Length: 135
Ligand code: HEM
Image (tube, rainbow, N blue to C red; front, side, top):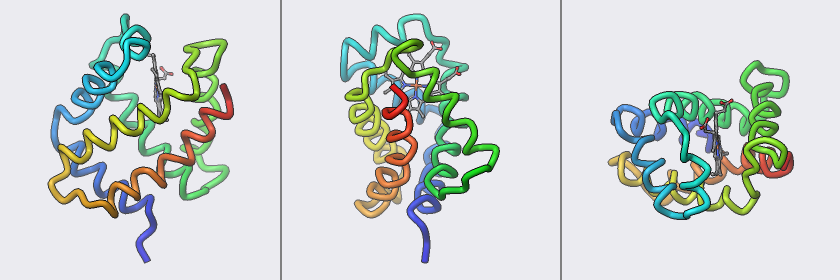
């Protein structure tokens, strides 16, 4: 059986083959909320799209539950960076983040289906729960 995380990674790779996939995501995400736009006011997006790309693979490993792996260990640091004392990302904003990312994936993966969308949502829910819990 193919796990949701591997369906997610296969779709993610098709999306990443499109050079502007993650830029489109950030444009969509910032257009969705003034609060989000303000958070990214001083961001260098050349760097940001690269670190987001890496963190999406981290999220897939986290969803597979590989405790103790190097990628898994990156999540607490990511949660701390987003917590109330640092970037101060309200837990509610993660729903918007996920909806915008899934919408960008639908636009960029020509093989996208409802089942693949579910794999994105199921896989990313694990890491999102950890970031929210760390707020
Ligand atoms: C699970 C979802 C998310 C992932 C995987 C993620 C990933 C990342 C990563 C990897 C970084 C760079 C961290 C570093 O420099 O150490 C980052 C920074 C950032 N994230 Fe997130 N993020 C998520 C959700 C959000 C949400 C919901 C917001 C809401 C606005 C947000 C806003 C930011 C901001 C403002 C930065 C700093 C950008 C800068 O350096 O200028 N993130 N994120």
